[in-house]
Length: 427
Image (cartoon, rainbow, N blue to C red; front, side, top):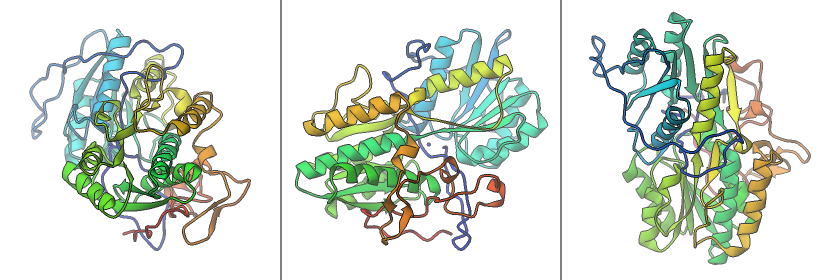
């Protein structure tokens, strides 16, 4: 839900930016690293003390004798989307690291209030603080400079001080590519070569995830076209459902969302069509839902917190992929069964692609391997070339000043050739 708030970008400069993505989810059953312990069950929120002066948020207490980690959430912990996925990751840590105590504060707005909350947690004595929204980046960096002995991990973003403040995110592009394969196969089976994509904000994350989906659609349905609706929010069930309805009513057979809620599956059910949800494994409940692309933060958080405790954590840029156990495709992970709406003929292809991803043979760079053309006929990635990490969070070369050491070669300000939508203007 990196998480995410809209920010302005110069259309003329097309400067590079790093963003989280957006929205996330942790599974009940998912691929785990060999040493990972069983999935955590729900635990109560930590007891809270009176808030700092001037703050409406109560700062949780630490536990003596333990390594104390606080989480800052943009949404409610049980939102069935991005924030709930992070909270299940927190629970995983509590369950499997007995020498660690965790707590959280939810519904924290980005900006000045988040800085106040993060500073309150630092003053309380937490050893590490993890913030899960893009708009927490600058406030967290400011507080990190004041408390050099505390570790600060920001999920998304593009800044680090190289000392005690770093960023982390994951390669959801790989999973969205597989979801696109499913959407294309479903549309083809229904003899309706139209699918849709609900995009949040015009940031690099949404272009790369949308293009990964479109490339997956093209793999199984070369004749399929992808339409797009922008909603300028990460979490608004009404807007999400309206956007899905607009896509369905415009002819789409399958609609994938880049936002938090499963509202697109509700709109699909009402029209006897299909949806692909996002962020949280538990939100693919309706028969209209083909699958969901979800986050599994538990093993990722556990590894980072262990490194923090051991003194081996490096404050920089961490980017994980399917092989690292942090991502899942509902219906295809161990112990799961594909939804009934998925065409039988595409299941072996998806399973093989997932197996390759889990083995580290297929990743986000594999998804963006040329030749790839945009919907204007331009070659954006030539044959034999691949996307690189510096392309992930930037619109186009040259890089913005903050990314001068990692310039984009291809960037993300383009739509794949099977996307019918125009590029939005960057503000």
